Length: 111
Image (tube, rainbow, N blue to C red):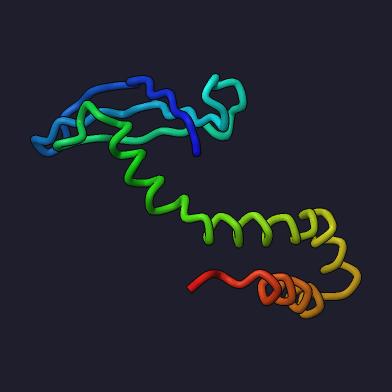
């Protein structure tokens, strides 16, 4: 579960539609001391003044535990960019592709 702060950046109208841009800060703890990320979102229509409702919809689509599990495991298995570049330099692109494919095979996307 993530905890959020929403800060209004600007209000404007685009093609006769009122819109608002928000700064979104996500935290891993309810005290909001452990930052996960900072980004932006735009709201309009029925959610113009409710960025939390939009974020809840996004979370429902992206925070599926199966998706997160595979994402984190796969990301942790990849070598650093420096190691990957060194692998390409010494062993060629085909060897690098085989190594990356082995990681993808070990941690497949959920269907």
